[in-house]
Amino acid sequence: MAASMKAPLRVPVIYILGATGTGKSKLALEIGSKFNGEIISTDSMQIYKGLDIVTNKVTREEQEACPHHMINYLSPLEENHHIHHFRNRAIPIIEKILNDKKIPIIVGGTNYYIESLLWNTLIKPEDVKRAQKTTSVSQRIEEGGNVDVDKEMVEKLDEEDTDKTDSTKEMSSFHRDLDNKALYERLQQVDPKTASATHPNDRRKMLRALNVFDEHGIPVSEIHEAQRSAVSQGLGELRFPNSCVLWVQSDQNVLDVRTNKRVDTMIEQGLIQELLDFHQAYNVRRKQENREIDYTTGIFQSIGFKEFHSYLILSEDEKNSEKGKLLFDEGVEKMKIATRQYARRQIYWIKNRLLRNRGHQYPPVYAVDSTDPSQWSVKVHDPAVQIVQDYLDGTVPKQEPLPLTEYTDGVEFNECKICNKTFVMKNIWKLHLNSKVHKKRMKSFRKTCDILDKRIEMKAAEREITLGNCSGLESTNKRLCKGLDNSDRDVSIDSTSEDGCMDVKAGASDIDSLDNSSREVTESCEVEAKDGGTFDNV
Image 1 (tube, one colour):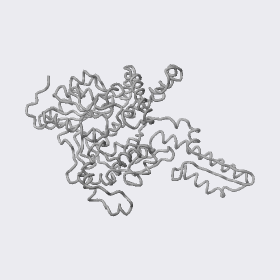
Image 2: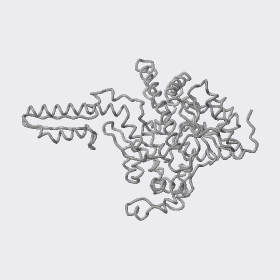
Image 3: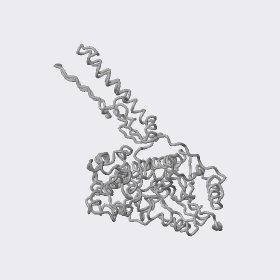
């Protein structure tokens, strides 16, 4: 029976967060059933109709036990659905639940969807107006920038993409056809500040920034500056002030085992057939439109499509062959790895965005531990219920929220030429330098440098010349080995004489051939920087 809610002081908004596999959905159902609440999903893949297995939706029975929103409302063939559409649809639902004196329970793992409901940080008309006031229009005119931002355009800023002008649609289509390198070069031209804080492979963020600039003539960095200015004046804070976060935690090793089992269960439930059915239906439309599969948009971002792609495109006979079985097993392993990595990114986002003080308003974050399923009631259900009850009673919860730490790591562009990776956050760069992958590659690189030294000495002896004549080569080699040279990774030595030619190249291929283990993808402390969308609200 639902708990009594007689005249609560203020109905809270409850966010239930955590890595995939920790039990977020289970806790949301328990809280919703006990307190007569309603659940709002913030999973960007569960918005699509069908594909229940690959998107890991709650069952129909669970949905009937407690009202669910923001699930199954969009065709999986729809690709032009963005965070603004989600936000504009979800907020009125939350407000209605609050007006009905019920508890909105927001649960899910898509970081930027969660942020759109936590804070007033998405670009709004007033942000553009503030940016216009603080931007040197004449300077941009002299530089050839587009500054035609009139009142009508500002009013249209927050409308859906279907209301864009034809020119904006054409430009958006043009951007989608560009590769990541071309997108990044374009972003560097129109908004160098945003480019310096964006990973060159973060396609979603680059497209968003370029579309904002082309539609409104103002760089995203200037709009964000206006937003930060507004926050310092008391604007753009928590969207729902009476909010709290329940963070369902779990030991990492236990979580890894749990996510692996989840993938096995999904396959047993019919994951492959679900993927095949959709793949076939999508291909009919794709071939009609003469387009390639894009795993960075729409439902194809779900873990499973990309991992099983090589298997899905096989004929029936090939699927039953040895090659098919091998590709199937590879797909299973890739999906398990992707799921584990996704769980780590979710945890990192919570720590980075909710527990590091950047001067914004933050909801209190309360931790519960789901490591031991047999202790669920004691360590998860009971403390979570008590926290919600305290909020309804208008009292301070007895459980202490997790402390905020000061934010010290800022944006800093770094490129590791040894591993051929780019980083835009200082703390991620530090993690990479201490990672197993980087250390293995550095070891291999130094080994290659030693080989170069020996070859230089041998060639010098053969030609009866002193090492002094090779001092320039030796100096460059030593600097490269110490990681101090900012030139390209390839080290080329070309010594020509009447006797012949010596050409020594030490690059990534040599390093990998010397130590094949450096190719292994390890799940160490390194955090993939491609999830740049979590560092910004573009």
